[in-house]
Length: 352
Image 1 (tube, rainbow, N blue to C red):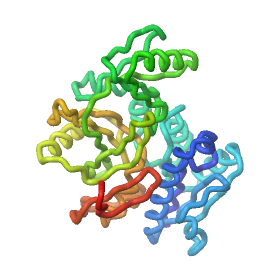
Image 2 (cartoon, rainbow, N blue to C red):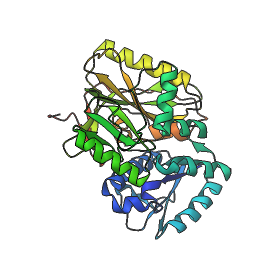
Image 3 (cartoon, rainbow, N blue to C red):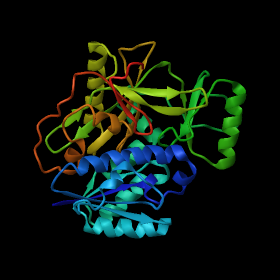
Image 4 (tube, helix red, strand yellow):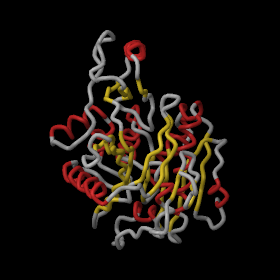
């Protein structure tokens, strides 16, 4: 029996922000629900998790049905930390799902490793590099890997380093946290003043018009596999709102090939990647043949909720069971899958 401890930080009871920000909790809950459901499809797998006391997911109905699923509910963050440590000591595999901001993903992974746990996911150095948008830009730029130009804000009187509109976002952000699209000089000055007052670490990028895409690279001991490319749906009307995506994206053969070649180059260049790695990309309107790397997410992403419906293979099994030599993933070709930020999935939607 494989004992797997799944720790989804936003749902765990350790995250005060998720209690105040419903969107954070919604995406975290969607991932947690999907992952546990897939793990319980493995007959030789026992799953434990820790959640805040009032959280209720559909998969929780399976608690206790055959002794393979245990939920620990906590009232305050300190209680979660104790349970996290205890579970890391007891589990065969620890699966940490956490955002990059405030070094949460890094610190929780480091703590699990310190306790001797086998953690699925990239090495600590890879987490540090990809979580820092400025360092990642420097890394990609130094290797001539195409990405969006990125700058660090200077003084509050500095002009925008790029023509407006431009993007300003947390240097150590996740899920669009703190991301703003600025179209007027007055918006730029107000944003920069706010950053200076709060001593926040942000980066600035030009707003590149184009098609927003994402995909996943799954690393195992045998191979790395690039998932079908999906569309990203973003609403800019009220600043920034992630609305899920659609897969597969409608791309021609040349665009698909150029994206796959870029991903191979990035994976060759970036050491320490392992497990499920999300990659955000952009096909510029000005040059669709030249895809750009937007971000690399060293963790599970919301797109998992869609990909699991696009294959007959159990993705969670391949993530936690690194010893088995699985055949290459087989993807469905019958239609399209739409997934929303809350985990809702629609097969062959009529409108998109």
